[in-house]
Image 1 (tube, rainbow, N blue to C red):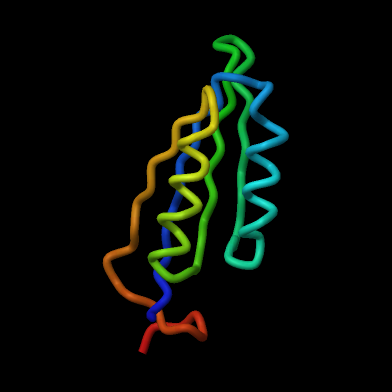
Image 2 (cartoon, rainbow, N blue to C red):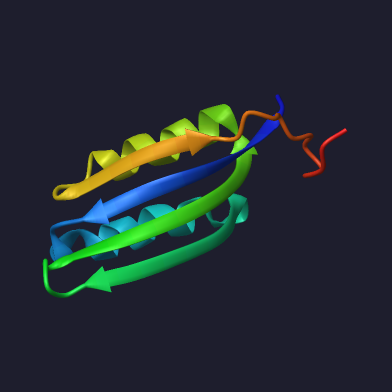
Length: 90
């Protein structure tokens, strides 16, 4: 199975879900290239972006688990170009 590059955009509206969200991300840490979180105090939310290099099934599973958390929304955008398991395009 070929790896893909993907960006998972996450909006956290329930701060009590943060520990579970972090647990899920930790479970997939081997696939995470980078992560950036921005708290938006005026709205009481946090916005997180996670960049992955993983097989499509792994990316979908992560996004699905995040979306099942209460007060958490997650959407995924995939790169158009497939990436080889070594992480480089051929």
